[in-house]
Image 1 (tube, rainbow, N blue to C red):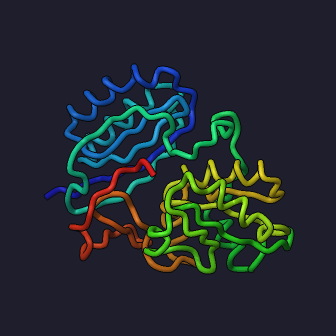
Image 2: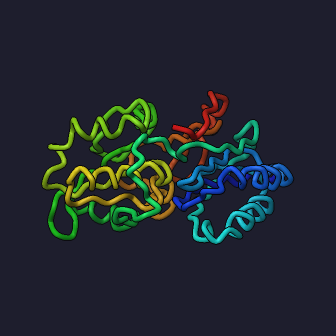
Amino acid sequence: MEPVLNIAAYRFAHLPDARELQPGLLQAARSLDLKGTILLAEEGINLVLAGTPQAISEMVGTLRGDSRLADMDIKESWSAAQPFRRLRVKVKAEIIRMNQPAIRPAAGRAPAVDPLTLKRWLDQGHDDTGRPVVTLDTRNGFEVDHGAFDNCLDWRLEKFSDFPQALARHRDELTGKTVVSYCTGGIRCEKAAIALQDAGIANVHQLDGGILRYFERAGAHHFRGRCFVFDERVALAPDQDADAASAARRQRCITE
């Protein structure tokens, strides 16, 4: 069987016509026999899809045909079989729910740090100004349990919308440090980084592309375990191989 190409992508962009976009994207993905989930909201798009390389290429072309999504960052991985059971294209209030309407990444994001720079900071134990660096995991606690950066801050979130309350409780432990928020593919840590800035944390970065991009560029350095993903592969190793022993576990959608 031909290997299955998996993509994960998001883009914060003003999409007031999200509901009108839904039927066309559903038809396009269905015609290409793709499986996975596309979430649309006024704030943007969030998706995970899997299919043949040709089908994925055509779908990415369709998405980037909308100028608002033209520079959407695509992260790729491979699997031996289709990891999704069905196709869903949904319209939501948020593409990742935080319940903080004032946080609008499309209006401006926090500074991003690329994976190789983060690796260098972690190698040397501080950023380029000599300030200590902490990695802040913005994922749910069960995801952190599969794998995380060494010595990361883990606030044991049950869902991402708990982040603002957790930040209020833990804000003082971030004082005087360079804080790098991270998540699976970048979407949660992008909102989290803005929340950190709004809370008065002076030195905040988000990990550009999340763990998946870090795996591509920096491998396993400073990361223990695997990265939980929201499909039947369950978790990816730094070399992007699926955790075959867990492949039959529960499937979850990407709403949290």
